[in-house]
Amino acid sequence: MSWIWPSFVDRELPLTREQRRAIDRDAWKMWFRNRWNFILYMLVPISYVLALPLLRDAAGMLAGTLGADGLGQRMVRAGVVILLPAACFVLAGAVLQRWRFAPCVYEATRRHGCDVCTRCGYWLRGLDDDAQRCPECGARREPMPVLPLEGDG
Image 1: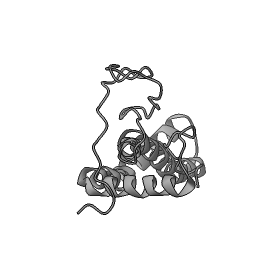
Image 2 (image 1 turned 180 degrees about the horizontal axis):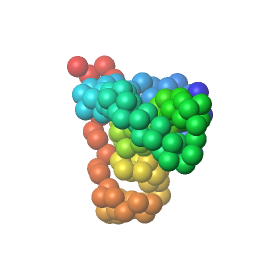
Image 3 (image 1 turned 45 degrees about the vertical axis):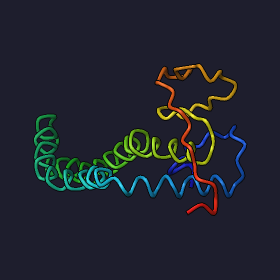
């Protein structure tokens, strides 16, 4: 499924398969806790449904302007109905993955003990503790969270 929804966990990190799955689970939990993620995701189909009549009419008028007959206009309108949602969902999915889900993965990775940048996910190995910025994106380096040991309540 990585070709549909890529893993944002750096492949170079020394993590087991189970740890990677735990990071993904934690990232999804963080994503679902933020209600704005769900609202943004639902705006895509709602906006498509609301804009569909206008887009079909605009596509029909454009086809008529270009000289298409009745069949051509109907085909253009049908194409808008089929291709536009696919393009919208692919684009919205890519945007939501990169700007809304990836930071959740980076934060979950940090909570599992890997020092990665919270903006780009770059593994900050080998850097001095005094380094204030990520060498990849220039984001301010966050201190590692102090995690409770297992068994602590």
